[in-house]
Every structure is written in structure tokens, then in C-alpha cells.
Length: 140
Picture 1 (cartoon, rainbow, N blue to C red):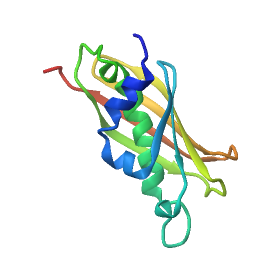
Picture 2 (picture 1 turned 30 degrees about the horizontal axis):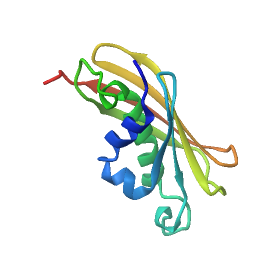
Picture 3 (picture 1 turned 90 degrees about the vertical axis):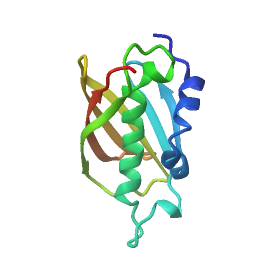
């Protein structure tokens, strides 16, 4: 499959919630996808820390991009992959200014796939880790 980052970005620009959060797709390949988000006041909770939902949204977009690369590039012979279940562990708060999510595929079958998404800050600190199980629908 030929990876076209511009095409992938155009496809996922329709993910309006991620766009509102300021998430950017930095790189995409069959082995790894990287997305990032500058931390602003809108990402902070009442206590001043980065809100868990903001971190999850970043991880979720990296998962979505990675599990749907072929669809976004226009070469899918199957339907969309959706999250069947996700589990996230929040490990540390951040003092950084940016969060980076890296997705790695652990297993990909005909309909079921599993991805590990690590979220680090721009200081290199591991902030959270998510495991996402995807289900690929039948192409219509």
C-alpha cells in the first residue's frame, strides 16, 4: 500500500472533535502512526492538569488513523475499522507543552485488530498508554 500523508490528513479532517482539540497527524506508515497536540488552556481540567479526555482523544485518533490507513489512502477492500474496546492507563501528569501519541499494531486479522498507543510529552515522559481493539466492518 502506498502511504499518502496528505490524503490521510484530508480523510481525517472530517474527524471534527479531534480537529477542535488541535490534533495533528505528524506521520503515518504501516509500522507506526504519530499524532500530536499542543497543550493549551482548553485541554486543562479544573485542577490545572491535562484533562484525561484530551489525552484519550489524542490516543484515539492515532488508533483510528493506524487502523484505517488503507481506507484513508483509498485502497481498502474492506470497510471501516471502529473501536470495539479501548483501555487507557494514565501514568503521569505532564510539565511539557506538547503530547505525542505513537500507535503500533500488535495484531491484525480479517476483522479484529489490536493496537498499542503510547502518549509521551515533549520532555520524553510516558504520560499514558492505551490498548485499542478494532473491529473491521464489511465493505458496503
